[in-house]
Each structure stands twice: as C-alpha cells, then as structure tokens.
Image 1 (cartoon, rainbow, N blue to C red):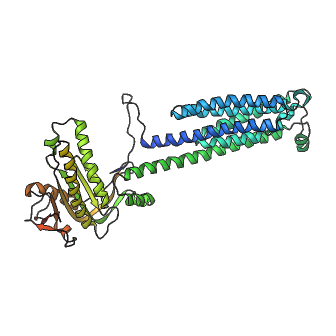
Image 2 (tube, rainbow, N blue to C red):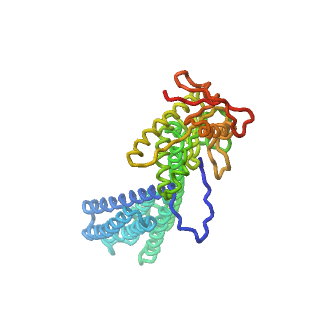
Length: 443
C-alpha cells in the first residue's frame, strides 16, 4: 500500500499536469476563502453606503461614496460569477485588492471635499481614519489564505499615505510641525506621524502575510491528512483509519515490527480464460465488481487490504495491531466472502454473465509489519515466511480441488463451531517439510 509518493520528472513532451486530489482540495479551500473575502468586501461597501447616507457631511460625499460602491459591487458580482465557475482565482483576488486600493485612494478625497474642500486645510486628509481603514482591509484580505493579497493591499496603502503626504506638503499654506498636539488637533501636519502610520501599515501587512502563510501551510497539511485518510480508507476498516490518523507519526514512520498476523490470499479461478476475449474496459469493470464485493466483507471483519495483485487480493488480520481473534476473524471473513460471491453470481447469472469462482488460503504466524521503503516512498505491508506460506496454500486450492484452505496454525486458533476437515499434508514451495492443511466447510 503506497502511502507517500515523490513526484517524478516530467519531460516537456509529457501530457499536461492533472491536478491531484490534494491540489483539488486546496484549490477548493482557496476558492471558498476568496469567495468569503469577496462577499465580505461587498457587505463592507453596502454598510459604507448606508452609513454615509445616515451620517454623511454632504450630498457630494453621499453620491460619491454610492457611485464608488456601485462600481465595486458590479466588479464583485462578476468576480463571484467567475468563482462559481472555479476559474481565475488569482486574478479575482488581485482584482479585489485593486478595489480595496481604489477605495483607499478615494476615501480621503471624499472626506476632504465633503467637509468644505478648499476651505479646509489639505492636511485634513492625513487626519482622517484612513490608516485604521487600511489596517482593517489588510486584515480582511487574510481570509483568502494567500499571503500575496495582504502584501498588495499594504503596499497600496503605503503608496496612498505617501502620495497624500507629498500632495499636502506641496500645498501653499501647509504648516509642518513635529508637535503631536499641533498635528493631531490643529491645522499642522507631522511627517513623522505619517511615517509612523506607514511603518504600522508595513508591519501589519507583513505580519498578516506571515500569519496567512502559516494558515495556508496548516490548510495544506490538513488537506494532505484528509487525502491520506481517504487513501487509508481503501485499505483499512474505518476503526483502524481513525487510529492511524491520531497516531500517524508512530505508525507511519519508516520501519516495522514483528507481530502475529493472519494472512489471507484470495484469487479468481480461470481469470485469464474468462477475460482473454474481453476488452480492457470490461476487464476493469469485472475486477472492480469483484473487488468491491470482497472488500466490503473484509472490512466488516476488521481486515486490512495489503495489496491487489492483478485479480488476487492479499489481506491481513492483525494490522496495525494484533488481537486474540485474528485467525478466527480471517476464517469467518473467508466464509462471508464465499457467501458474498454466491450472491454476486446470482446477479451475474441474471445478467447472462459467467460465474466467478475463487480460492482462499490463510496462514497465521509472525511477520514484519510496517512501512517498507524510503521516506519518499513508503509501502505499508507485511513480509515474512507467513506471507509466502499463505500464498502457497491458496495455490494449493487448485491441486486439491478445494475453495477454502487454512494451515494448521490457523486451525489451532478456531472455535469448535467452525467446521474444518483435515487433508493430507502438502508440499509447498519454499518449505522442506510438508504442511498440514485443512479445508473449511460451510456451517
């Protein structure tokens, strides 16, 4: 079972990259983040319009704010349409940033003109709440979990402050003062205070970008874990998946441990004969139908899918943790697999399809269970003589004419209610001494 895979080199002649499940999930999280940000931005514009019509200082301020908000809402509506179609995420996000910067550019001018324009010192534009609004918009852009967006807005906010300062300093009659009271309460302007505002915006912008980067990395890790859980669900029963998720570092490191495990092999009889005249798509459908039927039963008895080997299935009972009834559960699973196959064959006969026969072999003993390979590519599996013997016992089904065989090691762990019949000892490949086998009978 492959847990981690290192991306291989793709030459220029290879097919276009197809998004992985992790990339698709991350894309969806980003899309939702940008969608939320876009909706909040629209609500902000609506609130701004309502507020200015309630407390606006002049009709000009009301009309100008409404016009800018209307333009922004049109762009936001188009952006939401593209988001619904799952396209142009970065472009939509940057467009939203441009809307924010446009608002930051317009607000000081609107506020200035609304209180009298030329009759008011231009320094007033630097005494508004533009810095607070800028900081709020920077924080708002962190919702998209894209570090670029807070940085873009912060850069725009800094440019707005610098432009306002340059404009004010070049106006006749502008009074420059380093005194806080004069600059805050009087008509004077303090370049130092503006510089502090610029540094504050830069600091908050970088901080939000960093926090967004951390949040994005956390989301990526969560997405990978979600994908891993989905992958585990293909091999382990649901109860085992939850334990693996909670103890991933312990269970999924490189290496293995020795433990007692029941190993089951199941193989379709005459598979080549059945499928040799079928097109590849029908062969895949045939295997999918059979595997789906068997896996459902295997999971019901707490088995773990080690791997699919063509038409064969290798299953373990006792991984990642052993229990006293592993051998018994393996046999009961085998019996249930036979019953499930009978039910499947009823359906296949009804559809005028050939019946499926399979052989099952089980052995119980010590194996090394764990992650085999390198840190870049791991396969959770079991290895050892027990695996080889289980495979040979399954092969023996053909020569002795039985559908379900187990070893003496398995039989010793079974309750008397499970009916088995001793067969003559058989020589299996890899073993010098013959192996005692038993045929499992239907209860």
